[in-house]
Length: 175
Image 1: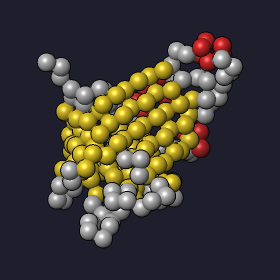
Image 2: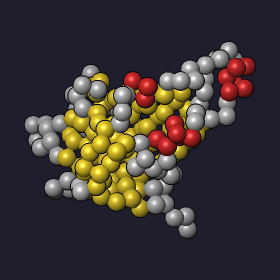
Image 3: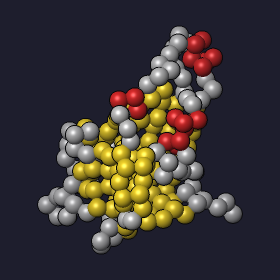
Image 4: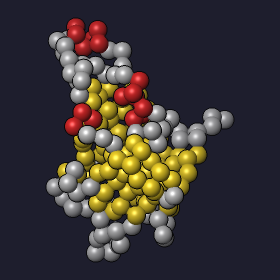
């Protein structure tokens, strides 16, 4: 994977906490793991995978109304050209998009800040889990350089479809 490909992984490090605010609540995302496997071309070729070019993954836990939701960002290059990025939010909604199919990343103002490197993912891009559960995601905005900027939950019988926007990041500081 190139340095430009790895920018998708740059916003977060192990132990970081990221806060998101809605009009009524604050969610917190804690980064629990980050792995970059970019040097396995020899190993891949030894097992017959001639098109493997690297992969990187970030795992996190989102605290939302007392529920702990799993977050996954996986980026991989499999043929030397195509960069696949998969975002899994709570294993309840799932999306993937291919960098080479995106004509350009979107620009948008979110909370007064202009971002020029956004993947805006909505119901057209999302592949829903087969069982509708609370906290399914209606849409999300992911910045290539800043990470998850905004997400909106689908309304359920008991909740509104709240929009959560990036508030601040608390970098991990080992003791």
